[in-house]
Image (tube, rainbow over all chains, first blue to last red; front, side):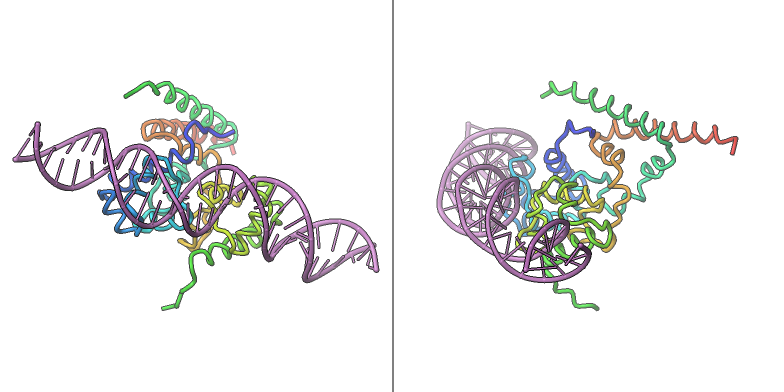
Amino acid sequence: MTIEHEKPSDIFKERLRAARESLRQMSQAALAKESGLPPSSIAHFEAGTRKPSFDSLRKLANALSVTTDFLLGRTHNPEGAAEADPLYRDMQKLNDENRRQAADFMRFLAEKHDKEAGKK
Amino acid sequence: MTIEHEKPSDIFKERLRAARESLRQMSQAALAKESGLPPSSIAHFEAGTRKPSFDSLRKLANALSVTTDFLLGRTHNPEGAAEADPLYRDMQKLNDENRRQAADFMRFLAEKHDKEAGKK
DNA sequence: GATCAATATGTCGAATTCGCCATGACCATT
DNA sequence: AATGGTCATGGCGAATTCGACATATTGATC
């Protein structure tokens, strides 16, 4: 039972925009040129109307110098091994009971976050 | 320097087979069941006649507990320990603020657990 | 208001993957 | 020879992404 109130495809478009704007400070046009993809594809990806193919995903990750796991929402760190994540190291110190409590707490956070869906 | 003119799609099929056979010792049918993909898709991927879509790639990486970067040939190591952990994966779906709170809570649990280690 | 750059949205045919199913090959063990 | 397990291959229609292009929309500056 995973917390899936945010779908993988939704995470992807947010990660892509975050990497392009905050991390690399590029325009869509600049990323398009760097990755060799048409600008409209970048826009579609960030709008969530398309999901990248095998090749497109590779080009995006290369152009942005981030891991594909970050773009797919599998890792929080744009760069490198998740094992280096201090949070992961803390996680490994937990016993089974503590892990269950942490999971419950995260579910609570996710639900509270969902209630703030009436914005904009 | 080593000449590496192997196309990304060729690397992928080799990585997929290596992860399934050597790393996890699963049959194609077993991986199909674990990932929720049809067995024929696994065969096509390893034959190189198809390349996985966005969703299929995620399912494969989850089922095999490896990074997508490894499957795509962007890194040399499978390094899937953290990404394989469901708790860690769920944490990636939280926003920054919630993630920070979850981290604090886990640190608290870890420290509390340390204090109870007076006995050996 | 006018202009311009950046982004959003949609349309088109072509190409690719999708799940599903059938068939054949290969290789053991019986 | 026959069986069973594993994998390879390809056809089928449906769904999706592809690149390319057109056209709004937004936001900031003048």
